[in-house]
Amino acid sequence: MIVDDEPDVLFSLTGLLRREFQVYTANSGAAALEIMGEHPVDVIMTDQRMPSMTGTELMSRVKMEHPRAVRIVFTGYADTRAVIDAINSGELYRYITKPWDPEDLIEVLREAAKKHDELAAQEALACELPGLLDDAERLVGESTQLDEEWAQGLRLRIEHFRRLLERLDT
Amino acid sequence: MIKGNREPVLLTVLMQPGSLCWHAAGIRRDGQSVPLLRSEENSMTDYRGLEPDAQRAWLRHCIAGVLQRGCDRLFARNMKAEHFVLIADRHFPDATEGLTEQLADHFVQWMINPPVTYLLTPPGFVDGSPVRWQLIAGELPQTIDQTLHRGLPELVEELQVPGAWELIAKAQST
Image (tube, rainbow over all chains, first blue to last red; front, side):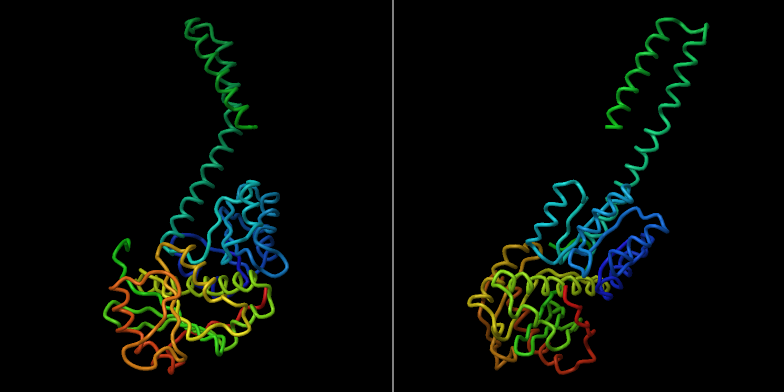
């Protein structure tokens, strides 16, 4: 998703990215949120300076409403305090200043998409692994065929994975 | 250093503070010009009346946007900027004293890849041969200097052909 109030920027970015990514465009923060309510968006990239809603204000909303979306702000200003604060509060994945090299931008977006996929995989793992560990623990408890030393080792490994999962939840 | 096999060019922005407009073009190493974009007249007015720091910030924002669009258009032509050259044919009117130098220093310090050079020329950019300019900030390596001397007169002639340039409409103020 690309958000900018200048139509020619949206047009040229769409031309640059459409071969590799499915691209949605919006000319305001409100329009972007509306589209994100209807379509899954992995990565959102917005201009900072826009009328009515700034890029960082939009990203605060996106963080609350679509936390999985990887968030990038771009700006032509070098001294944007709001963007620095947004990075430090963990709301942004990247802050890009104009002018960027189109090849570098594509690489940043590839990395952002990879980051999104990693987060989604991590979330799926955290969701599915507890059930698998429950099943494994039950099998170990019910089986009379297992070597006791081996079964004890497996119980310890299950406990280890449960502690790792607790860390993921935090 | 240019990655890949894109043709290296000078991304040159001609700023005309007299009419508060700009043109952006590529200049090939042989001096051939590649007109890209132009603004409407009075598209650079909004810095007027701002505080000194805000004047610089607004112009930086404006020119960075021009450079961004220029990079995008070059990419579509399988070209790539090896150097940014910002050329103004006079100081900005109604500006705080020293704005040109502050703006030029800011770009040179902020943008290092590719590097930026900021030049000031007589009104109309070219008033004879060889082309004359005043270096405001940045460095002008010999190869870039030669390319600019070869290409600038042709580029300035292209300013008389509006149809050669993609017109960028003025954005609403933000």
